Image (cartoon, rainbow, N blue to C red):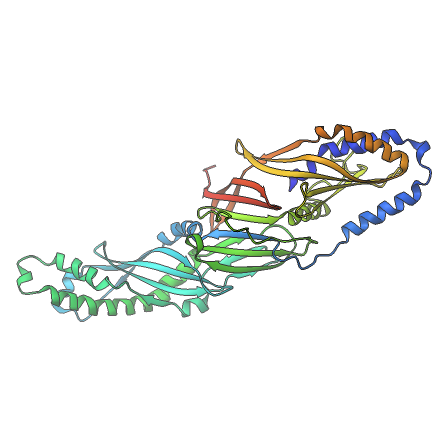
Length: 436
């Protein structure tokens, strides 16, 4: 978005036009200035329309799980006791249960499934696995710009414990291996397996009762996954989940900006999104309107002089637009409201790529589409068309940034960037942040 303001050659165009005009050529420019000022006001006051989804954020389940797992592993195990085992109790050893991982899974619209895996250990050795499953409704806070995925009291109350079908066999085998070979004559394997089956029922019941009191609240706190939404005026965020590509969470974002066209359905044969990186897609019109919004908010300069330098009292005021399906879809509109007034509309083909860990944003193949000015001013603008081949400008910025996700500091790196079919596509990899 920031790169689009760097179409420096457009500023030179305006400067040349101003030089060729001069004070003596201002006859009748009052009416022209009125029209141009009205044109800019109309551009700035455009309202949004139903353009579908403006942007989407795709988070692979595998990425979210990797970020949560270190915190899950830090939760302390809880000890369990099994009554009624008689002489076999000594062979079960000291029993503990520890969480091992979180798995996300698809669920109904506006929900996501959570599965917490646990490992029951006897004297530190894995005995068998168990799990808890539930569904949660993500918390969307548009004002704070956050989406939070995690357990709620309601979700905790609806968790369902479960065990794999081979749990009885696993526990029975571990216990049987602890019995001295001489004693196995008097304790057959079938007796041990039966005791293991009874023990599992008691263990799951006791674990669930104790976990709800001690472990699950801690897991609810540590397994929260927080996503920061784009800094933009948001109208809504819809959340769905799918099992495609190993499972993904999709955030469909709609802004209040006057976006001409939202995201289109990917054509047949389009490669699937990355299963290892976060993918961001924005329609070209959304990108253009975000640039206009950033200028209006003072986040980036909104006035420039004739040399293309940002200047508080610069005579040139830019605006951006995007026309889907055009060979040069990006529009750069320049308004000069000082006499002799003019408006210049240019089109360009934008591109974005990664070069030496830098995002390189370019505007190429630029053309002058329209000029609104007095007759003599137009002559100066038309002469500038001879210089259009010089309008290949580039802007570079870092592809790395720091972020806090799921309670830990990570480094976000843009690993892929492209303009594809009127859309900006970014793929972002996350890794542990380098130490300071």
